[in-house]
Image 1 (cartoon, helix red, strand yellow):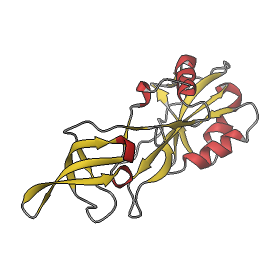
Image 2 (cartoon, one colour):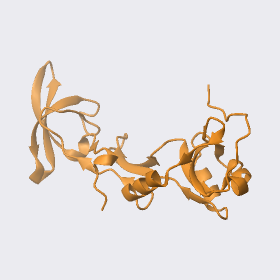
Image 3 (cartoon, one colour):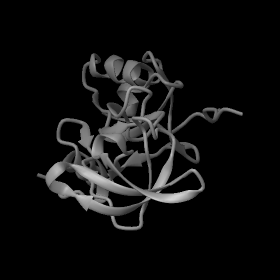
Image 4 (cartoon, helix red, strand yellow):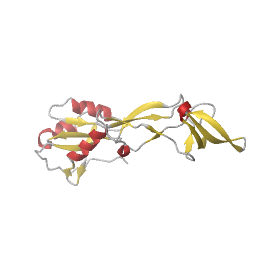
Length: 189
């Protein structure tokens, strides 16, 4: 059952603060565009870019860091209707009866991680013994343990079960599902 906006009327503050907004399903971009076009409202929509497996091999994708949510800075007493009824916005997140302000420090930390509102998740190197999934080539869909790394040739040796026994196979790093660092482990540049 989808979440609903509380029905009690909130107390509207005249103070300009950051608030978290729930968007309509898969409409974060629409809501962000609508909010960014409104006067006296600052919108922040953090996203993350990473490589994902696809039938054609790994490809870069950009998704919402917080799917279904984004942030807006405004004074509810003056702009609540404009924000609430912006295209793509479902409701303003509340804490009890009142809108829940998001501390400025959290927005600053998120912006430090993703200066362009898109956080880059660089691939991390694999570790010996780690299980990885093959996403391209004749072994696509197989999983195996990392048996060796050949960084000079951008290749990884895997132990794959083939014909009932483990065999050492050397594959390109592009044929393997990439690992990504946790966003908080990435040092801001």
